[in-house]
Length: 86
Image (tube, rainbow, N blue to C red):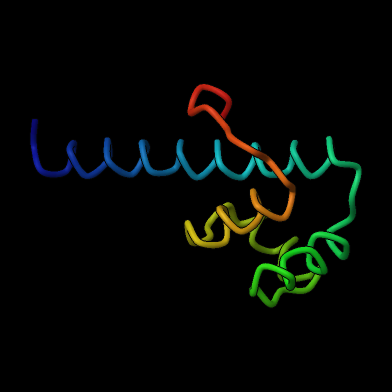
């Protein structure tokens, strides 16, 4: 495998995980029947300062820190998730 092919494969794998995380969070927010504003309020209680627009932007881009992802899981009161669910 050439360096370019390896780089392309890594990029595709990274994008796949980003898409999976983004879609998982969007689905869980919808399942919880809360708005991005409500999520922002819940995140604040976990020490994360966001607003509805910044959450929408992160989820639209699909790029956010693992800390944001984990804080969202806590804010959504998800006790545990399986990687197969993401």
